[in-house]
Amino acid sequence: MPCKNAIVMAAGKGTRMHSDLPKVLHPICGMSMAELIVHSLKKAGAERIVTVVGFGHEQVEKTLQGQCEFALQQPQLGTGHAVMQAKQLEGTDGITVVANGDVPCMRSETFGQLYDALNDADMAVLIVRLEDPSAYGRVVISPDGSVEKIVEFKDCNADEKAIHEINTGIYAFDNRKLFECLKLLKNDNAQKEYYITDLVELFKQQGYRVKAVEAADQEEVQGVNDCSELAQREAVMRSRINESWMKKGVTMINPECTYIGPEVEIGKDVILYPNVTLYGKTVIGDGVTIYPNVFLKDEIVEAHQVLK
Image (cartoon, rainbow, N blue to C red):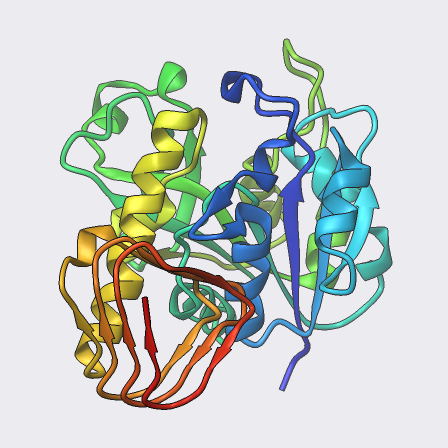
């Protein structure tokens, strides 16, 4: 089995957050967005993860300490330039998934699909199909399922604007071919930046196969640009987590007012009243009842206790 790597792009400031905190450290369900991405990648089998940091890198490194490796992007010269900084992966075999650090709802299953996609391809582009693709970049796909190119909206012709498949900015690469083609990236554009989207054309020029992988849920690929979108992603994640636990037999009096982190463990016959918050590595034993307004983080609650 090829080694599974990942590069998480987490260098941006997130100006529209209007915060001194780096964007990827803003929390969703009690965990920073960066931690959620690393958590999902590990569940998908990622053995080696490099987080590319920049703005506030000391804070990001402290939060993710022991969970991944780091590479510093300074100055920040585009998405392709960010990937170039993960030099510790150069010269190694394997598959490398590249993901943004501000898509906190990405499922481990979808990352798994990207790793699997390289069984018969050299690069995979994660796409999503939108009824109204708006001003997103379009992904042009051949009848055989291979990706021809990614076209920014401003450069689309009439036929390309009619395409509903858009680029999510999440990819998988054969690692050796990734670093081979990164050396061919050029920055001959108005911004003088290196774009990861240009790798599609470079891979095709080398005779490599590029394929599309479609995300089943458009919600999971949505990024976060401001605090309003942060709240929207939090609602999606909270609903997903709560639905999973209710299907396992946990009773929630009001799921919309129940807050559970992704690393929490809950036994059977548990009853949770409104405004209960369970974060961190909290473990709830069988038969526990928790009444309203209880906040627990990294706590162990023995079976059949009643918390008020």
